[in-house]
Length: 334
Image (cartoon, rainbow, N blue to C red):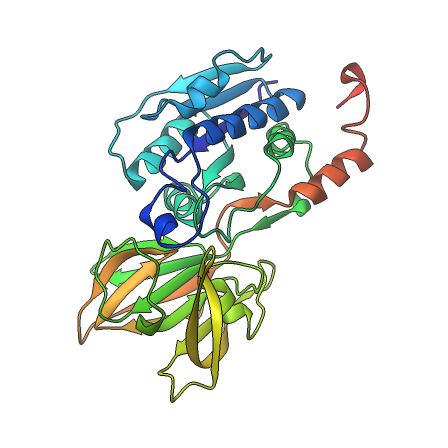
């Protein structure tokens, strides 16, 4: 019986100007190739029959796998290249067209946001290679490959997967967008700006996860009221001027980059409850300033639990041992 896993690589993750403005490590193409090779080794150990990659501009995945002695068949798919988030969406469409339902991603929150925009109904093992990362985690790629492989083979109980929360944005006139971690309204900013957020320009933040051990917008809420991935709610953070703030503290807005933030209030928001973001301002989703909101207009954002199914790698590995899936000779494994 065939089992297919796609490896989705964002060649540009971890290489944007935010890394220069902060103190983040530059993620090289060579480092990503090593990650892809380790994922493939894990997939092969899990006895996956087919591995799918795309031929992106820097040949990260194809060069990583071309000399590996894999039992699995490697398929290199082609799609038009735009050198932006559309490449991720086109890669997902190509993978799904080949019958893939299990994916391993290399990127940050923005990369996985593009994946969810293209295909929310998937099993996804996200590996962090971006700048500000809350959705993908730092996990050993070898074990991520093992878990993804057993997911594709049907060896992982579905109750061990958690469906991700998603920010659904109604921009008006039928236009929509999505985010995974944060929707942020910024004052006096502009669409396309890639620098770290100026703390003084933050007006309103809606978080699916408010975690004190994260980087970016998430700890602004997480330092005051922790909301985890498993919690069926989000957190709305209203910012304020220094004089009006009820809370004022330094937060890590990027790796090694702390700034004082001023918070007026935090409110837990239940799933499916819309939150309005009124202009003027710029709406950023997972760090990407994509939408301008003019004065007198607003957009609605609602959190739903209808994103990808994401495994806890450590939890799944323990379950595979408990079920006897791993820890036996290949001929005796399920």
